[in-house]
Image (cartoon, rainbow, N blue to C red; front, side):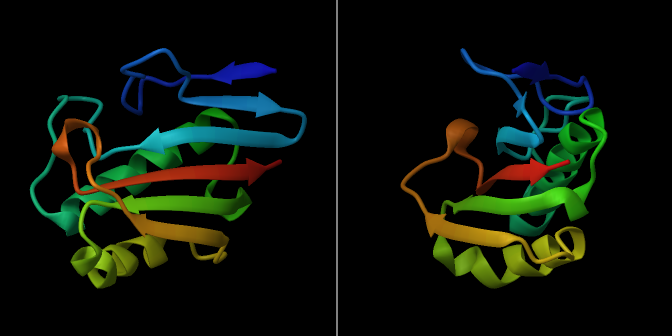
Length: 122
């Protein structure tokens, strides 16, 4: 196993890694919409979805991959009413249409509106 870490995505805020490489697979921890340069969270689901996708992309890049290597995503929304707006942003990044689960949850760390985790293959 190999730890994947980049300063271009938010640092882990707990006892976990941004991602782990195991064989040909990358398992990335959920990415919330924190701007790694400022520590700030943008307002609104569209901006937050964009930032979460960018954070996923930074981790993929650190592993030498991109969005086309993603085989599975799990998306968490604070409110399912944001589903359509979230999907518009998500579709711009995950053009390979990986398998996906998308659920509403009671709360996400830092009170954000979305979180995305991925599994990718080399």
